[in-house]
Image (cartoon, rainbow, N blue to C red; front, side, top):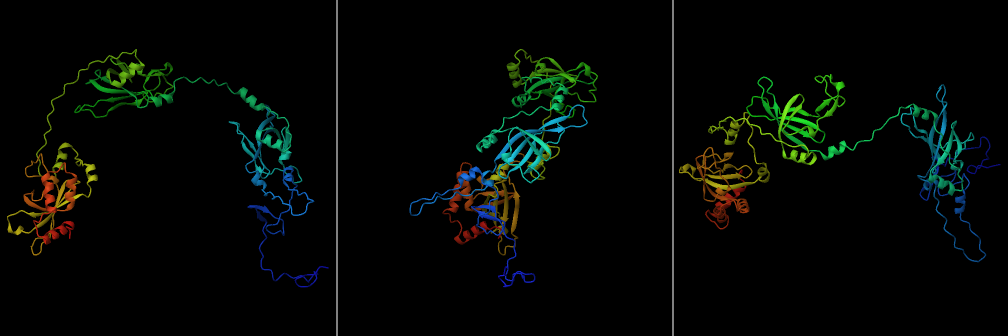
Length: 561
């Protein structure tokens, strides 16, 4: 009689109680980790204990089991270190056996065939003893082919056994899901593995031919493949790209009313044997300037006799109706060529065309024909009207050059290099009026666009409002003319010089150190007198008291204050 150890009662009906001290109600683990691999464990076995082996050891595994032979000597014997356990899914990872075979599919209600032979490939994965069946795809077979049986362990019998690699061999039948497959041969890797495990493979068998495939081959019409010619279109496209033959011609249009001979340019593209005709536009000819007379295309030379009534005025002529297209041999300088129903006199060509014909077609002579050019009419010289004073001189000139005025072009490199570069000078107003005495100005010269702006400094109790005196503009010298203006530049701004701005005279008295640094970097373009005047003023010059010089220096640095 068993006794309940926790309560002291026998295991009789009515004497069983649940364990009130139990606190863990989770499900026990089914996997344990050994040497870094997850292994299944038997019930009631803790982590770290050996699982029970469900299968017998193979021959190779039995050889790896260490056997200890007892020794008759006294003392301890050095034991060999047991080998590390490596599971099968690691040893046989990505190792697959490949067998080729076929099966016969019965065809019913067909007088032409009784069965079909469908070849298949068996893949056996050693890591988990799974198999899959794959049928190679045949073009235009009409049968959904590919993977017939997905990867799984295939049943061997009704008792629940599965196929093992020991059950496979060449020249044997394999019954899977009611279909009998015949294994005919295997690859070299599979043969080496099977022989290393002590299995003797049978002789391979050929896959029998499919009767329906043979019948279909006989019924299929014979297709004669012509040997490709030596002419390669791709080679022509690569080697002749951007190589164009140019001919100068005259379109003879004198047969029509008010017709004449009009100059055109015929271009033959060697890349794809296409032709393009462009009309040479003459100014004041009275015709619209449409240069493309014939778009780039292959021009037919001879049309097949059976396709002569082809409606070319409605439908585009294709290569099926054309017997021959124009080639470079048809373009002979000095002769008349008929293209698309129009006559063209080829009177000359360019240098590249001459070199091409001398190299590739030396038997075709080039005979340029002199052509009388039309006498040009006397054209009146375009006279630009005088400047009227509205806007800048450059903007007014655009109104005279174009019907739709365009903005004047700017020097972009000069704008990018001299952006935010400004030369600042201190100036006073040179005037005889007593009201202008003591007025101080900051003259700024912008190197990016050669413009000048003037800012007047504030003076206490002067009664004159300070601020912007002159916005950014280009100032011309008094000695320049309206049609040929000469503008002030950094070379003209010397200390002590007088600058006349729209009838007002300004005397330059000082400048900042950046002006001297910039002019020294451009010493080859700036006169020496201008640089020396700045050095004298900024170096040892004491033309102004020290307090006034410091005040003006601060005003130069911050004119807006």
